Image 1 (cartoon, rainbow, N blue to C red):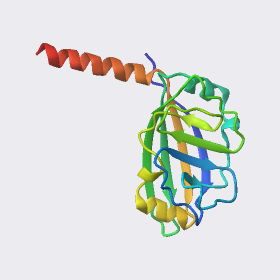
Image 2: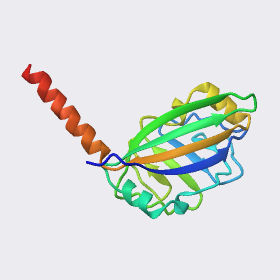
Image 3: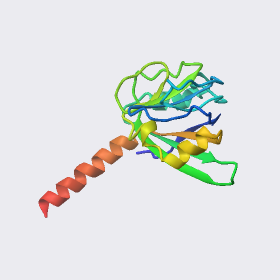
Image 4: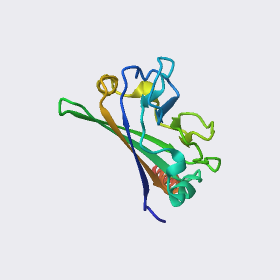
Length: 168
C-alpha cells in the first residue's frame, strides 16, 4: 500500500468581489475579473489551469480511491497568513481539460472544471478572516495533493477498528 503523494500548486489573487457564499463549490479561475454572481470564486488570475497539470497527477486523481486535499494558504499585506484545508476524492470522470477554472465540489457532479469531488466543504465554509483578506486582494496559494489508494487504506482501517470494537 503506497502513501506517496502527487502535488500541483496554483497561485491566484483575491478580488474585491470575493464573497465566498456558495455552499457546494469552491473555484479558482484564471480570469482577471469577477462579478458578484461568482459567489464560489475565491481567487482570480490563477497562474495555472487544470490543463497544465502533470499527466501522472491527473492519472492518480482519476480513481475514487485517491484522497485529494486542497490546502489554501493566504498571505495578507499586513504580514498575516491564514490556512484552510478541504478534503475530497478523485473520480474516473475527472478530465483536467479545462483551460480556465478549477472547481472543488461537495457533490459527485463532474465537468471539465472539476478537480475533486465529495469535498469536506465549499466556499461558504472558509473562515471570514480569509474571505476579508481575499476581498482586499491578498495572494492565495492552493496546493492540490493527491494520495493514491489513501481512501482504500482509510476504509480498511475504519473497518478493522469497528470490528475490533465489536469484538471487545
